Structure formats: structure tokens, C-alpha cells
Amino acid sequence: MRKYQIIENKEGKKAIFDTETGQQISQWWNHIYKEGLVQGKSAYYEVAFKNHIHDPWEYAIFHKDNPYEPVSLWWNSIHANELLDGKSEYYIAYNYNEKQAIFHINNPHESITQWYDYAYPFGLIKGESECYAVFEKNTHTSYIYHISDTLQPLYKLSNIPIDSLLYFNYDL
Image (cartoon, rainbow, N blue to C red; front, side, top):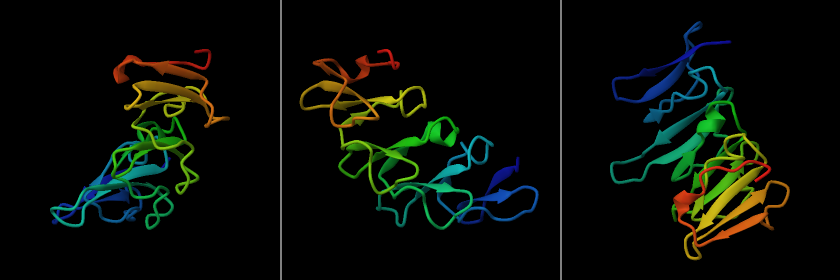
């Protein structure tokens, strides 16, 4: 497996380079997350970009074979730890209204879920099951769905704090 490293230039921007050939693998970014490509866990890496001092940070996921087109859209934030670690094909995107949705790495334009107040980062996201859980603040309700039916929840858990649902498996 090829080895990669992150190098920082004089302006503080970072890029990924192939350690054997010296070839630049990524563009220059404000920040590149080390998980994934650089650690040899997957072919993906996440970058953070900011145009100007008062602009918000934007985040996207890239594949090593195409440094000019992200495999995700640009988001307010992304939870992609398990994708970058090679354990899952899913990630959570945060829009500018702070809502969250789950996406598959092969379809950046269509979420597999609706937009929720919170998507729990386990189950489908961690590659542990085909189920995922989400939370709606206004009803204080968590919902557990199976990937095969994203419209009809398997379970509805009402009036529980958001941090109470810690783990579930397919047997629930």
C-alpha cells in the first residue's frame, strides 16, 4: 500500500503527497484530516476550507484519485470518521441550519434520510448494522430506521434525552 504524508507550505496551507514519488495527491487546503488516506485506512480524506476571515468553514470529502472534485457536497460540518477509517460507506452532513442527514459516499446529491435535528453516529454510520437512529428536538423523540425503509421507523422512543440512546444493534 502506498504511503502518504501531509505537508504544510509557507502560507499554512496543507496538501497530501505520495512519499515514494513525491507527487502531490491533493490540492492545498486550510486543513486536511489525517484519518483515512494518510493513515492507510481508506482512499478518502476530509478537508476544511475557508475563503475569508468572517466566512464559515466548509467541509468536503475527497477521494485520492480525484483531488479536484469532492465525493461529497460542501457542508457546514461532516461526521465521516468511520468512512475515513474504512469501516463504513456513510457519513453525516450538517447543513447551515444545523440539521443533519445521512449520505452514502456514492450519492452526494441525495441523502438517504430526511433532515433531522440529530443523527446518532453509530449503527449504519459506524458500519455496525443496517439501522440508524435520529432525534427530533421539538417532539423529544428518537426514531430508529432500517436502511431498507427510510420512511417508516422500526421504533419510536418518545420523551427521552438525546444522550440516552447510546447504542443499538440489529436485534434491538
